[in-house]
Length: 134
Image (cartoon, rainbow, N blue to C red; front, side, top):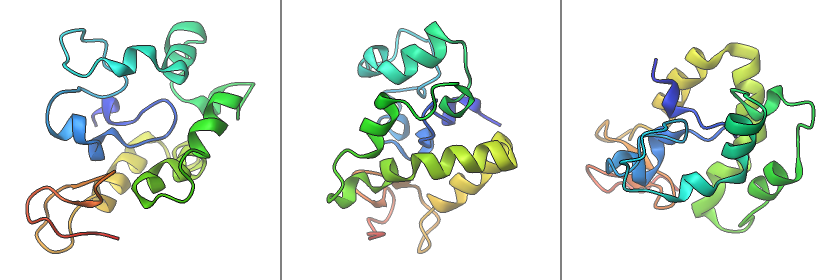
């Protein structure tokens, strides 16, 4: 189980273009040699990792907070961001079934039904065959 594939907010890093293209090692990784630098300023990551020492937002006494609500409610009418609208559902699934089962579930969800390649969010298509999922 690669815990780095689960962000603190309930997003599956394994479907992130930056992770798939090896410019990021996942939201949990502290490796500063990564090409993707935007995660260092993520308020949710800072809160969980640096301020409260939590594995997931759902463990927090302030759940759901304004930062998590803002992420979930961003780009509501844009299909590219549908993965964000699932974060509360994802966090509840992780809490109910455990991180290992959720990671396995997500790995299956983000596989192309046509060729078995990996689907990436934003583009919602397979990195191997280009099949659109939406």
